[in-house]
Amino acid sequence: MDWRPEDLTSEQRQEMADHYKKHMLYGFLWAAGGTAVTVASINSGRGGIIAWGAIIFGIYDFFKGLNGYITYK
View (cartoon, rainbow, N blue to C red):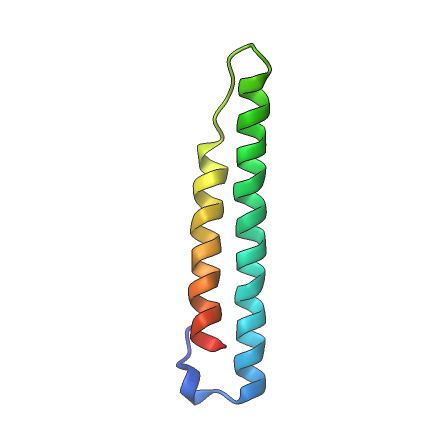
């Protein structure tokens, strides 16, 4: 789904911006969830797990969405 913004109608650009806005939301949720799991497990007092995968994926997905949103908005 990589089209040049100038080749799309305003409705299509808005649809693409909405698509990338979902990436931003889901990326934020992944990163926040991974951070919450990490903090909760460390605070449990029995060691803990660090949810690096969820945090890194969330950050990546958020910035992918932000870049796409800025491009098509």
